[in-house]
Image 1 (tube, rainbow, N blue to C red):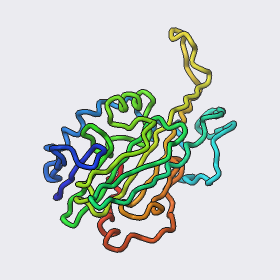
Image 2 (cartoon, rainbow, N blue to C red):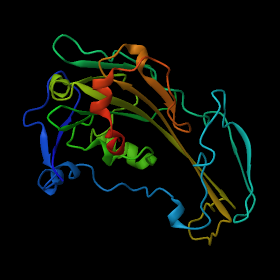
Image 3 (cartoon, one colour):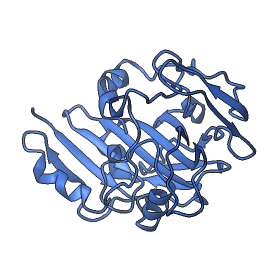
Image 4 (cartoon, rainbow, N blue to C red):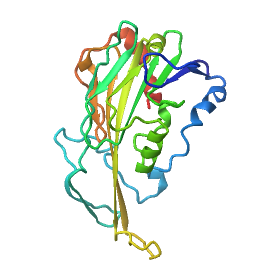
Length: 277
C-alpha cells in the first residue's frame, strides 16, 4: 500500500513544533507507534454481537432511525426469543443528548479554522477531529487532543472512568469547553476536509436483581442493561456555517439538503469514510 498519513493534534492557530507525524503506509509502524503511547488502555470493552448470542442492541441494522421528536424517557420493555423479559426505566437527565450545534467553521484569511459550539447539557467531554485529503494523495488527520493521538483511536462511547482519565491527560476537552481552533497547517495540507465534533455523555447501568451493597454477597443478575450517550455533529470545513449536520448518537447522519461542495471536493473526500473517527 502506498501513500502517507499526516497527523496533527492540538487546538490552536499554529501546529505544534515537530508536527505532523508522517505515517508511510508502506511501513506504517514507523510513525504510528508514537501516537498510541499517550492514550493508555481503555477500561471499557464495548459489548458486541460476537461477544455472545444473548447480546442485543438498539439502534441496530434493521432499526437504525429515531424520530426527530423521539425520547428515551419512561418505561422500557425488551422481549426476545433469546432473553428474559427486560424491564428498565429512564428518568430525568437520562434522555438523548441534545445535538451539537456548530458555528464558525469557515477559515480565516490566515487559514485557521475557529470552531465554536453551544454547550450540550449533560456532556462530560468533547472531542473534535478532521479528516481530509489533498491532490498529492496524502490523507490528513487532526484531532483536538493535546497529546499525540490518531482520531480513530477513540470510540464513539467511553466509560465515565475513561472520560475522567482522558480529560486529565488532555486527550479530551473538558465539559466547559466551547471553542477550539484547527491550525492553519491542517487546512493548507488538506483543502477539502470533514469535521466531526463529539459530545460524550454519561452512562446508565441497570441490572436485575440489583447489585448487592455488600461486594462479598453472591450476585448473578438475570440481565444487565447499559445506556450510553453521545451526540455528534459533522461539517465540511470551509463551507458556510449552516452546511454542517447534527447527529444524535442514536440516529444515522441524514442528508441536510444543502448544496454540494462541488465535484472536486467530492472526489477528494470519496473513500475517506472508512477512516473517519
